[in-house]
Amino acid sequence: MEQNKIEREKEYLYWLCQIPGIGAVSMAKMWGMFHSFERIYNIEGTQLISMGILSQKAGKAFDGWKRKIEEEGTNYKRLKEKGIRFVSVLDEEYPKRLKDIYDFPMALYVKGRLPDDRIPSAAIIGARNCTSYGRQTAQILGRCLGEAGVQVISGMALGIDGAGHQGALDGKGSTFAVLGSGVDVCYPQRHWQLYCQIWEKGGILSEFPMGEPALPQHFPMRNRIISGLADVIVVVEARERSGSLITADLGLEQGKEIYAVPGMITSQLSLGCNQLIRQGAAIVTAPEDILEFFRINEKQKIKLGEKNENGLAKKEKMLYSCLDFQPKFFDQIVLESGLPVEEVMSLLMELEWKGFILQPASHYYVRRL
Image 1 (tube, one colour):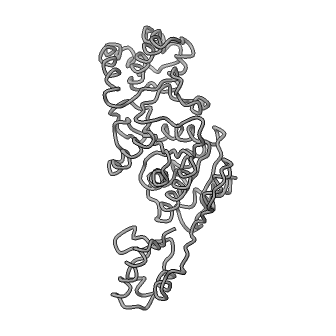
Image 2: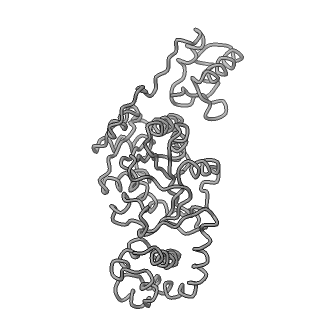
Image 3: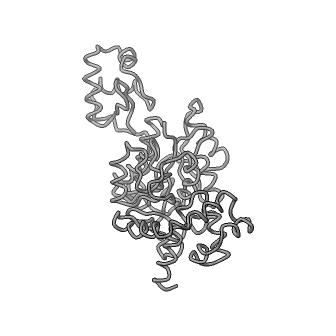
């Protein structure tokens, strides 16, 4: 198809993508039947209803939206001014990985770049309300994958998603966020700085129209894109019933390799990962477990949870031994160590400065991976 024809078809597809209640599967059915988005525009909604492609409500919206064709055409042309591209299945740059899934989106809104089909990709996903251990693990995995040239895919949510993205950025790698809102809507808002960094070093993607808020029903839909863009899916922490397990299930259906970070059997946030392992998911004990899948040799083996304590003074070692990967309150550390409050405070500051511990919340301390 010549470029002018493609551009015209994309304008009609853009119009179609704005209509409420018409999803990827319905669009694919229409495309498979009529092979032209311009032809689809010229069909009556009642005909699409009678063919079983659209519901009564969606068919009515389809006919009503025809009055907005010029307005949507103007909006389409203004995307470029906002630094946003509308990448359709008609474009060569549309991700080939996505075309392999059943309900692939007919188009994506993109700020920045799309993942490169020639480069390995890994999704790092998990709980929003994660533990300090989970956050650190996701960040280490993201950093090591980024350093090794593996693209990191996630959903920019709080917790594990954000940590995976940040790790990839720390490792000077490429990372891509698939949103449950329009690409021009930063959700959650507290991730604005991360949003800008991902846009600069990778890309922000969404199938939802501009300005669309992050609604609960959007997230299961965006999860299929996260799994679709990845070669492997790494679940760091997840409850027994969570969106991360939905993504993992979608990945299994798409033929992707599933990895899970094991956790304590007493932790609710480990139930999902332990369940995946019981069902046959590969266990993550270190970043090289994932790199081996891609046949990437890591020059320096990095083991999670190992720190060289040789450089610590005697009392620093003693206080460090009181901590683990679960946050511990200051008063409890004082009680267990038997040291004066002022000395514990000074030692904790020194351990934090040396990079051995973190303070995930005020007066709570945890070992750093």
